[in-house]
Image 1: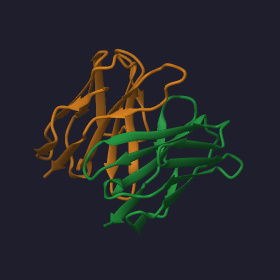
Image 2: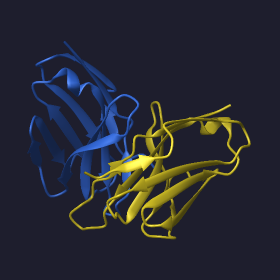
Image 3: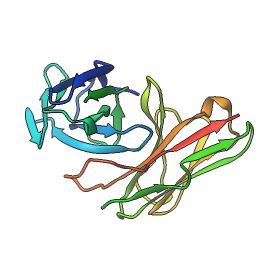
Image 4: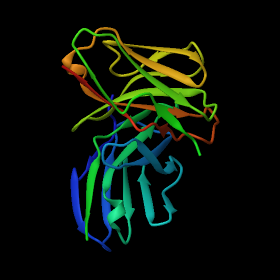
Length: 110
Length: 114
C-alpha cells in the first residue's frame, strides 16, 4: 500500500533558486529514501536517511526526517536545469520493500 | 556500475495476449522487484523475490505472475493482457546486506494493451 505522500505535486522554480518538497508517511519506518526520475526513465536513488537520523547532506541535497511527525523534506539548493525531474520519497519498514508516494514534479526554468 | 536491463522500452500487445517482461541485473543482488507506475499513483509493487524460485505478492498482484529461475533474472507475466494493464513497468534489484537498502531500477517498459 502507498505510504508516502509528497507535497507539493508540482513545483516550478527559477534556475539558481532552492527547491523544497515534503513527504509524509503513516507507519513506523527503518529508513526513508528519495529517488529522482527523469522523464520516462527509471528511478535513480538520491539519498537515504535512517530512522535514527535527523538530517543528512549529499552535495546540493539536504534531507531532514522528523519521525514524531512522520515527515521528511528534501531540499535542492542552487537548482539547475538538469534538476528538472520527478522526485519520489519511499519508505522502508525494515523488510527491504519500498512504499512510494505519487511524487513531486520539479521544473527548473532557465 | 549496477546495471538493470529490461527487455523492451516500448511494447504494444492485444487484449488476451500472454505478455512476458524480462528483467536482468548484473550485481548479484538477492532482491528483485516489479512495479507499475501510473500517473498520480506513483509506483505500486506487483511482486518481489528474495531468492531464486521465491516470490511474494506485493500490493497489486492480481492479473500478474512472476518467475525467477536464475538469480539475475526476474520475469513478469501477464497471463491474459487487459487494457487496464496499460502502464509503465519498472523492475528493480537490491541487496540483502544490512547496510544497503537502496534499489536500482531499470529504464522501464511502457506497455500498451489495445
